[in-house]
Every structure is written in structure tokens, then in C-alpha cells.
Length: 322
Image (cartoon, rainbow, N blue to C red):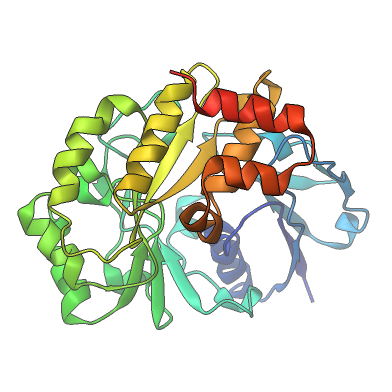
């Protein structure tokens, strides 16, 4: 039998592109194998270089790389590379893009994933979506995506879709367990769509972004429209970059804590080369574990985490800086 090999280098969830490739080649009577490598994103981690020594046994080998700093960690003969981490412009052939995902290659998974829309109306300087996908446009309906009892939508700015209320109403009517996994744009929340969001059969936290302290006032106003929320039901992505003043970061975190929400710190890759790398690590570990964030102050966390007094002092001094 003809065989192809799919290599999932670093996806955290089932890789949609690889699943579509699997469907495409199974329909052509190929036997499909998947290797999942779980290469970490973090640049300071010791990473193995995977030499796919048996790649010559397959007629074709496809490797998907999500994170740019992992692009040199998979080597082998005749490998066809793709994914955002390899080339921002890489895309599946149109014929393959139209295929349905083959979830059987991820047998432990029980959630559907997919995009209702691609692209975004924003042009955030740290984000590749506008360059990769262009302006927001619809690419699928709900029924195109759902194959399980639960679904996580990967849209980058769902609320910017002109017909997003129609889609929310459908999700409500069908009582679909769902989450907008990449977050929602809180600047686009209004009374109407807030009410619809409250009626969803939602999975986990409602995710929003708080990328810069300059959005504080609008987030204050929009948070009032989410008064139906339970404590800790809302979680904010907190983008962090070494070029930001430290109080840009800490003021956002304190606002989130004061309003009984949760943060999720997302470090720019340049944080690892920063002289304040230890602080960025400490604040990330503190914020990204809800059981710690809710029960401890930052200084309590530092004293529990470290024995090095200098490390504690330095991180706390930065946290308290104005």
C-alpha cells in the first residue's frame, strides 16, 4: 500500500492542515501515519533535533510547524514543510483545503476545531494575521466545523464579522457547547452581542485581550456590559514585550485582579533575551495559574517560589515600579 507520513511538530491542538491532508490521501487509498513531536515553543528550553530517518519509506512526508523558532528542529529527506512557523505564506492546495478534517489521526481528541472566519480588522504590530489572512472574511458555517459534542472556534476576531449575531443565535438555538479559543475583541462588545454571549452554552472562560494599558478606559466601559458574568469567568490575554514599561504590564494585571477576572500573560519571544527575563518568567507563572493568582499576592508567590533573596527583591521591585 502507498504510504504518507504526517509530522505534527508543535501543535497544541489537533492540526487542521494535517487532518485535511490525511482525508485527501486516504481518499486516494494511501495509508497515513502521524508522528506528534510536541516540540515546546519556549526558546530557552533544550530542544531535540528530530531526524526523520525513515522518511524514505514513505511516498510523501508532510511536516507542519506552528512556531517560527522550531523550524530547524525537524530534518529528513524529501520532507514537505508548511505551517506559519515555516513560511507565513504557506497554504494547502485548494483541493486539499476543501477536505473535511480526519480526526481519527488524533484518537484521544473529543473536540472539534475550526475557523468560521479568517483575517482581522486590526493591525496589531505583534500579530501576523493581517499579513497571513488579510481582512476578515467568512470561510465556514457552523455545520462545516462541528464533528463532536464540543467545538472550539479559532477565529482571530469573530465579533468583527458583520453577521456574527446570526451565528451566535444559531449556537444558542442548537445549544452547542462552544468556546472562542483565540479570544474575542472586547472593544466590539455591545449590549446586543453581550446578551447573546451570556446565553451561549460556553466552555470554560470567556477570553478577551488586554494588549496595552492605553485600552484601559474602553475595557472599563465594556466590562460593565458583561455584568452577567460569574467571578473569574472572564480571562484576559496580557501581551508583554520588553519595550513596554513595566507598569504598563503591572497596571493591567492589577486591574484584572481588582475586577475579579483572570490574566493569561503572553510573552513576546524577545522577552527571553531581555535583562528582565527573570521578572517576565515570574509574572507569567504567577498570572497563568489561577489557583495561585487568586490566593496569593505577587510577593507571597515570590517568597514561596524562590529561596534566592536577590531574585525575590528584583522581581518585586520591578512589579512595584511606577
